[in-house]
Image 1 (cartoon, rainbow, N blue to C red):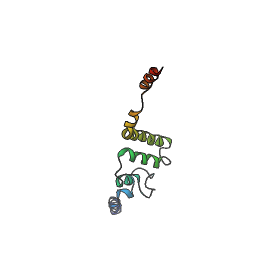
Image 2 (cartoon, helix red, strand yellow):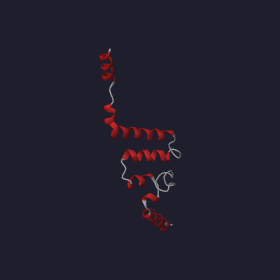
Image 3 (cartoon, helix red, strand yellow):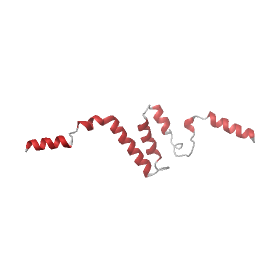
Image 4 (cartoon, rainbow, N blue to C red):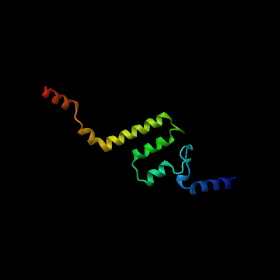
Length: 102
């Protein structure tokens, strides 16, 4: 019996981390696990999280996982496109122009 457990443990340890999953089966069913995709494509954490939550929503977290994906997308927009937001005229600037035009 101890030999069988030892062999099982050795097989588990020798398996690629992308061929196994600890705690569930919601990623292992895919041809490529989200973590492997993220690593191979050198994506940043927020992009990886979006992929993870979109893939698993049907099998694990449901609507909340999609809301988490949206949250991470909002973070990416804030990080990468903040300058575009700042270029938009503020309501104060618009009011001043409107008032000056009267």
